[in-house]
Image (cartoon, rainbow, N blue to C red; front, side, top):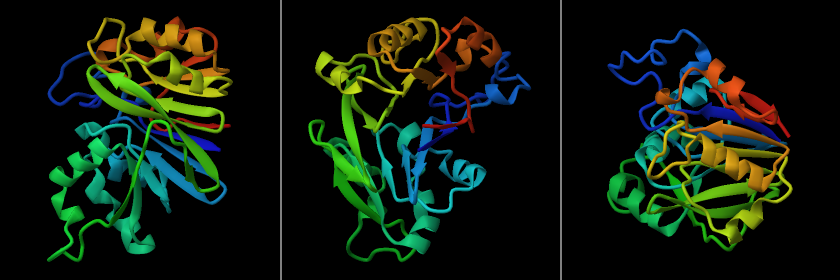
Length: 254
């Protein structure tokens, strides 16, 4: 199974528009971060988790030719605003399966009403097939099983997903013990770590490291990185031996 990090930044991305922060001015490609998303592929199967405003650019960069579905963590714009750009896949493949919590589905129907229109539908509009995700019910993607992992992003419910020995969680602040039990014996865990300072709805670095120590994956990758966190090269030097700072276009194999 191949994991390709499409984006590893926060809702503003890095560089932030108009910012003179030193990280935003960095010439290191690893300090340039699109909105957070990951592409997972194996055999003939191809899925992304989240579809943010950089989706088109990300698909062109990774040269993705086929997409079998989108798994959504939650409804925030940096995770969903790229929906219109699924159209090239629609034109080649037909409707796009989208997996999401019922609340997220209702939110998308309001924000992207033309996508869900049944009467007087514009012929070029994106075409989707909605699959509602329940926190206690695993579901099939290709020939594998996706296990929803329920967490909280401040006061907002979010989903992470486990597929085989890989798990992806972003925008997490708290998670119940029952859900943590779904994350045993992982080879790779991806988890958000916004910055070193506390944040009301995201893990900071220490919270992420504590969570990694609790779950005990073989390897862990940090994502959803803020420019305030610092330079990629300097952060990596601070991390434990089995913890890595993810970066855009990083590819790993499990």
